[in-house]
Length: 223
Image (spheres, rainbow, N blue to C red):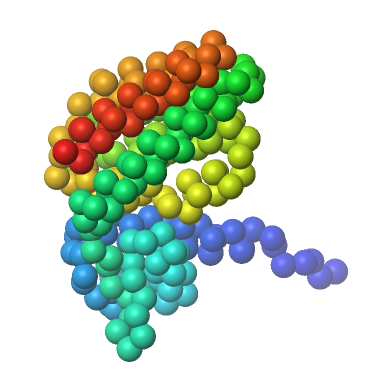
């Protein structure tokens, strides 16, 4: 009696593609591949000892995220580091949308489960001290992103949430860790102040706490 093909074979390719994506992203953020460098698929195939398929998938994904550029007749290159004006614009936008989202979330009286998720994200940020290497600050950045995304979800506005997701703030802000040492103590306190205001259902305090956090982040990373 013949048996069906085992179903566990496909996920292995998915896992491989994810691993290749993370490795290339790490090299870009650490500037092992410098901004503007051409990313030759054949060379990457040899470097990672994989077929071209996960390489192409990773490069297309990184292109969508803004870390890689795809140009006709040139191919793939690492994207330049965003300039000062880009980061100024990011924080201007966040300064409008995120305090509003925090106030909206507080009015909706977040459930205990949501508050627990926010506190877990802050705890994950506190688990390690981020350094100037992406591998070190990846967990911190992902937890920070998760925290802010939960606040946007709690606000209940799908357009605002999609705008946040599409702009991928935290991925690009990660590139600033290469040049700036971080004191994460204020970041932890600022996030806890936001959670406390949300838990209390206080819209004004939530908006103010988010505004102070974004201003602190701007001063630590951009100024």
